Length: 142
Ligand code: CA2
Image (cartoon, rainbow, N blue to C red; front, side, top):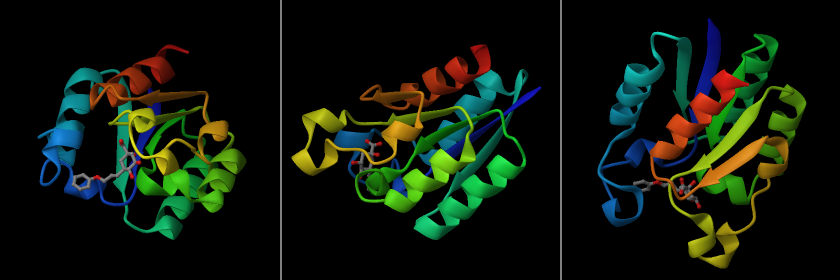
């Protein structure tokens, strides 16, 4: 059975609790339940959220050492700021899909650039939480 890690960065623990017009009403726990409902029988899913850049970097290194089969990452705002997160993903050499709930290209210009996208096989932006499902499906099929 393949193992797929689903990583969420800063403030995504607030999903469903604020800004529903941008991010919807579902919580991170709802997302985990929905992904487990769709993929739980065919994949081992590992969830991790942190508001700390270093914690995400250490998690990515641990996942690389464990040779995880795929990484789905929504780095939150770190997407647009963190060379360190990009280096961690680059160094992990694991198949990675970057997900954004909102369409970052419909938003402020500072969100249009992703430092981490170059470390990903694909970027999904604007599909809401469905983007995580598409990312896991893609990683399991390849
Ligand atoms: O659209 C996305 O998924 C983002 O990665 C979300 C980040 C944002 O900085 C990126 O530009 C795009 C922000 C996540 C904050 O999420 C919240 C959810 C509910 C309430 C407050 C923040």
